[in-house]
Image (cartoon, rainbow, N blue to C red):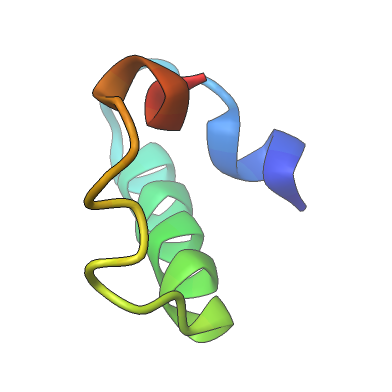
Length: 47
């Protein structure tokens, strides 16, 4: 699941837009609190 979320979106098209929306919905479904990573360096969160 995480590999899918981190994957490159590819060329701009309706299909890639729908795939990116699906990724966002997957992340939101996990239910991570908004401020959970507030005290973590941005480079660490990005990694």
